[in-house]
Amino acid sequence: MSQNKIMEPCQLCKTITSKYVCPKCNIQYCSIKCYRSPDHLACSEEFYRHCISEELGARGEDFNKSEINILEALKRFNEDENNEYEDIDSDEENEEVDDLEKRFAEIDVASTDKLWSLLNDEEKTEFQKLVASGKAIEMVPQWKPWWNFRSKSKVLESEEAFKDELKKNGCPEICTTKKLSEIIKKDPSPLVQFNVFNVLVGYCYIMLLFNGDLSDLSGEATMNLLKVSTNLNSSVNFNSAEEAIEDAIQQIYIHPELESSTEMIKSTREGVRKTLIGPHALLPNYYVMAAFSDIKAMFNRVLNQKSKSKESRPERDLNLSEKVENLDRKKVKLSLKKIEFFLAWACEFGNDFCRLFSNNVLLTETT
Image (cartoon, rainbow, N blue to C red; front, top):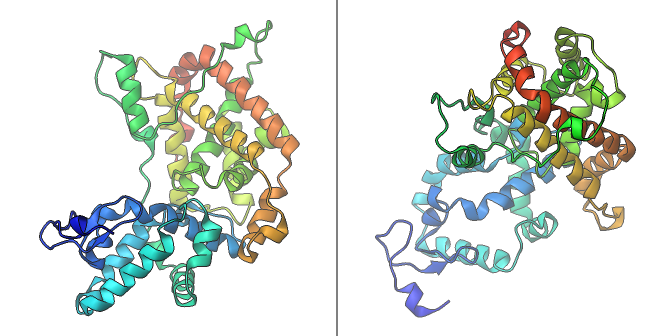
């Protein structure tokens, strides 16, 4: 650590002379309080989020929205504990920060196995207590769904700029796809539109269940989507929007491991409704395309995952990993083909579909 950096002011509080340099972002800071401050949370985000995901997996439970994106929970937890550190001798602070720097300086935060191995017994115990007590879950902030955004403007000055804004808001990027008429010669079955409902209910549900982040837990999310969407799971076709929606809702109730609170079901229905409304009057099918693109990306991640041997896997990973490995890859591949079909269908017929069904009364029911 160079002396010229040490003598500069702390880049977080900007008042006290810095003593340390973060090994990840190179920001200079003066104390553990600044190291843990809200302005420096990004450096520990991946570490805590992955570790908590791994630890919850060891309990053999299906993940829900309260068990993903735990960073804010830990932030709040640390804020609650701040008074505990205010009177700590500065030498103790320095030793603790030094220890963190030494242990994690050369570690890729994506390597959860390595990160876990570097925690001492006391840290692991405290971490497990935080998860087991439910404090981490209770403090997880509510994810704000990207489908809630709706422009009030009647015109689009720049469609590309608007799409960039949607992406920044968290909307998945739409896959490049051909229109259905460019892929098949015959007209699609009129039942396709109802099957779309069934899949969208499943998608909105898992997005809420996983607190908006499917990237790191694609296997678990795929398992739950296949549980909810009968169309994807067993090729059942539906004869009406009502039948398709209610079947998906019933699947949520049927599986006891899935969250089926009144609020969750209400939010799922509302999510589908807003997905059908779209971000702008001139882009009614944009969110439907985005949803199917997100599912496609998730399925591809599952199919591209390389299995780790049991021998190389930490004990706490075994239960969850075995669940994911039990996914029927053939079924996932078939489901992926369906999603690609739905994408092509939505590209050609999605605008009319959204205009016709966006105000469906079934999507506004609260019971």
